[in-house]
Length: 417
Image (tube, rainbow, N blue to C red; front, top):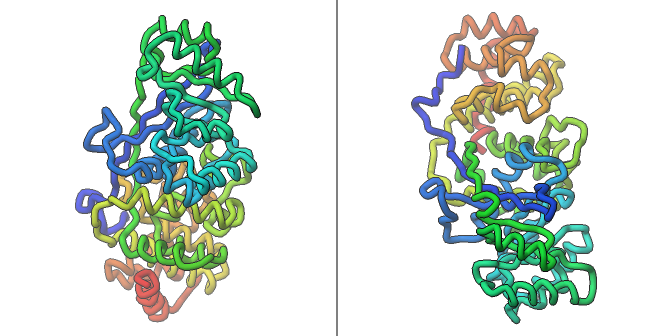
């Protein structure tokens, strides 16, 4: 028996679009991809009014999807606005796989330059976008590893050669010249001949559109997180408590930490483990990026998100009574039990990227195994089928229906808090 809520009645997911455009070496090998936000209303171009929103959308939703589909050797170039650099959103990115790209409208003010120096010291690669020799952008050249020269703006061969030569003669660590917006074979051959090392543009491939769907965060959760993140430092336990209040956020964190965006590690199955592995500072940055990315979500009903959280608290209590499974695993079982309806996609697809214990996977995906009775119990309580609920409680090893019903009601109050 499935949940009483159905995706036909509730449109709880949002489609999102990210474009990727490859960057090639002079030998024709793919070096990496620039990731570009695309609006659902206009997928052919970057139609947005806020650089921070666009980049956050790419980081939170697009990065795990893209990196899971490309070679481990390939880099991902992520655009960063002034606000995102100052808020240190960059720290949410894995430095082994990402290049931080400074947008051309960022000004080289002291705070920005200090942040770039700190990122370089941490081992991040930096790129400067749309460089055509602007005097106001030259302070960035002391910090960046890659300079992207815009071939649509620098149209003469002499100017293209001069820019590349100037970059190679600068003091300090070597800088890679990347020819971007290359549209013809002649431009590509010129760029190779005169010293450019990386190449990007329509001559090779137009940005390729990829689509997926996400669960938007509900308003109350977003407000609580914004207040908590802005007002003070949070302990790992406090962060865990905030994240566990929202099933969509918990799912997206586990999907992100288990994706190709992070170096290989042991499977991470709980929010507490994700916080310990990621660290509170990078996690705070990821949360801020997530909140920015979801800042334009439409106001959706909260039934399914609240239902998953309610089941999580109830299952956590029940596990403490019967001694199995682990309480955090029981909470995760309930929390994720409504994801299929939230995403309008099968559990098998949704959970392929999260290494949950086999008992939880079997219960959610196939309704088999010992924990399947837990899902059936929650549904029986929700539908008022108390006789069936009593039988299921006996199968689980608990024999007081009245107390269980009370605890299920208390779980509703906890989920709303």
